[in-house]
Image (cartoon, rainbow over all chains, first blue to last red; front, side, top):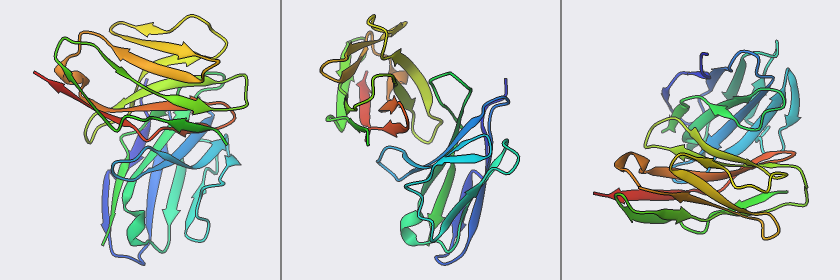
Length: 113
Length: 111
């Protein structure tokens, strides 16, 4: 079974620019998560989708971050405009219905200069 | 909101020895899962072990086992016969109505 796919793996941008990350979850996994992991810290949930509906986006900075999962499969996370403190690894994870564990992608590392 | 606390930022173990990583959590939910994830440097987060809260028996996966104390809300990970490849960040995680991670414990394995 193919794992969670993320792209790009690395991105360097200037502050105030925009960036988008893409995630394709494992086939059949209805639940999709986006996490932000700042160096040396644990992952922080940004948004959780169930199919194409948002379950939890309470920690998503909505003034600059947006995410969508239009067809209930792949998802895009966008940051516009980026700030220095957005430098982090953005992790996508998915989970099948009824199962506990999350499966993670390799992450997208963002550096904001 | 549920919180997960890992009180050991760093731990070190000699190769072939045993080490225990600590985790406590706070929740008012009765149905949940607990996990330990391993994250090697610049590599993917992978599941080490999982525990369903309704199960009294502690989970084991080869050299990895947990000590789940539901009343105390404690969930420690024991790694036996430590290997160099065990060196990584270890994250304790809780999944109930949401999914939360601890801050992590960096494990160093000394040859």
